[in-house]
Image 1 (cartoon, one colour):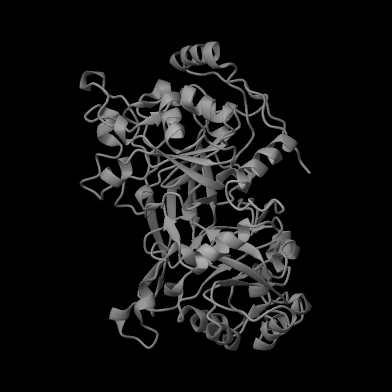
Image 2 (spheres, one colour):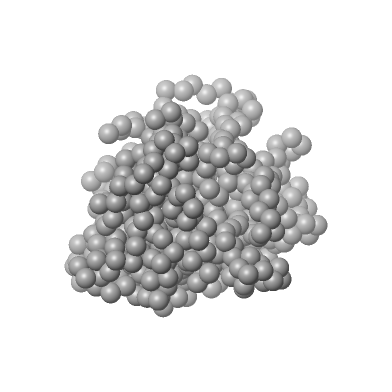
Amino acid sequence: MNRTRRRFATPPLSLCTAALVFLAASSAFGQERGDAPPRFVDHSLLIAPEFPCTWPSYPFPRFRITHERTIGPASAFNIDVLYIDGNTGTQLDVPPHSVARPELKREKSGPLGLAYTDRIEPWQFGGEACVVDVRDLLDQAAKGESPLVKPEHVARFEKQHRPLRFGDVVLFRSDYSDKYYRPLPEGRRFIADVLDRTAVGYPDPDPDCMEFLAKRGVMTLGTDSASMGPLPDLAEPTHYAGLKHGMIWTEGATNLGALPPTGAFYVNLGPKHEGGPYGEGRAFSIVGGELPRRLIDACKHKRAVDLSPTLSPKFPLASPGNATGEHRQPYLKIDFLYAEYLDMWHHGHLMDATSGSHLVPPCYALPPDGSPVNYAPEVRSWLEEYEMKYGKRGTSNVTTEKVPLEWTCGPVRIVDVRSLVGSTSRQNWPASPEIAPEHIQAAEKAEGALKPGEIVVFRTGHLDRYLRPQPHDFGVWADPLAGKSEGWPAPGPDAIAYLKSKGIRCVATDAPDLGGVDPRRALMTYWALGSREMVGVEFLHNLGSVPQGKNAYFLFAAVKIRDCHGGPGRAIVLW
């Protein structure tokens, strides 16, 4: 294992200490009976340019990550731009992939032709993992053809374990991705060689198998093959056979062998692209203890809240910057292939890595180990001020793919700071009300002390109030940054240090970011987060829909992109 060395101003938690913190957090949700601690299992393929992470046929685009700015004289942050389409890495398919819109009045038209990734209810993303072992099919076909998973394979699972039912996530385990997802050129075996009919296809269910599962009420599936479509000629029939029933599924899962046949909680979360017939995702499971059962029950009974706004070019999803030329990459939809039957363009997205709901890893504001930094003079003065009060800034190599899943999932604690709105003086704008330790302590006094491992989410109400499409989009970023309106409440470094002392590892907000509109104070907040080995989740909304006193559990995971200093994702709450 490649162990990354890190240096921090505040000594980081050791692996053993981190485990103890997570155990303590589990006591708040599902550990009352003294059961075994939960364990997180990642089922997502690593996305990187040298891997076969995109569909290789023309004109599907290749994934790109551009490190647009790195920490130095021109930037205090590491800023990335992504070009990504929904057929990248581990991904999610939804009905409009094969079901036409109802107004087209075609044979395969129906209401589910409008069930895009941004309209799927959050409860359907998860459920009880039921692992159907089809390893006996791996490589058992002619070149260019897929071994078929048939109803009898599912019946074999039911005979060995139990009947399938609504709320299950049926996962077909062939170990295909485990064996063949490799860097190129070896990675051609994953998809390209199959399409060229020089290698055996990946195992997949046939249409009869989909119909069999639909009769059981199964609404969510997954496969560790590159697609849910058997080659050479059953890809579309199988897709339509399942999607016409409202099913959704994961393609390109991996590591399914780490799961028991039943009992684990499985979920696939991905960015909420407007009008997406499929989307890149992050799939993972939780195994052991009482927690999986509770999350499974929440999905089965549709107790779920979506906290991520829809991603659309119409909305201000990335910062316009504090000065001319300082803006981040706007979120763009790029069409590349027209599907005539569906009257739909396949499309990808060009976007800043911090667009919409996203992760802030430690390396966002911290330079890598051993890298001298030549900050601009103004930033050097801020750093001196910061280190005099808070200790050394530290360094980090923790990019998005290295952030453990358990860091961004846990019992949710909403700290309502809406009372701070309007507390700054107009003559001091641009300014954000600062969330201080005493504001957090007041919430603790009212609702109980914070527990290690909880996900602290600041409710500012900013995006609920101001997130609007063009031309009414100035309230989110532009006016606050220009001093035309007050900035959103944001935690200062003192609040971050206090949260760390309480065992909090992840801090989230329903504001555009955790920094606020003052660049000096914002940078100190991000230094405080990174140097304490903490992460952030930004750009949430809809916190008012999270029920209080219901053991609500926060789930977020960023798309698994190598060397990324941000990372789009989706946040939901189950209760």
